[in-house]
View (cartoon, rainbow, N blue to C red):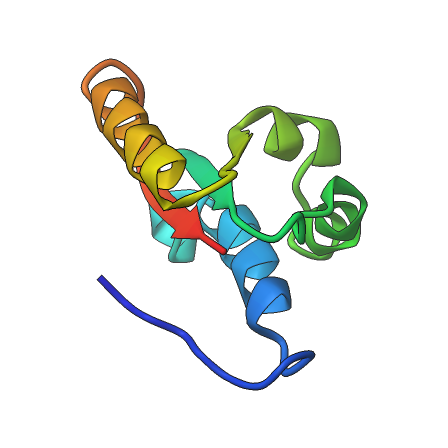
Length: 101
């Protein structure tokens, strides 16, 4: 578990977008070659921001976005339910990263 914190507009969400892409790289390229789950607590996840990052790494943006599962958490109880749901998904699909932003 890694916590990233900082002031507003310091790049935390941009870092999570980048990690959501690089996690999908082949293992030989330093990635995890798997899917990513994003629990969005602030409405900050922007698919359009993922596209140029995917292109930068030579990945197909549509495929990258297809491998990112997102859910909006409305409160802390809902957030915990989503974490449990992602845990169940990990048993059947190759998820390599969970981002809670």
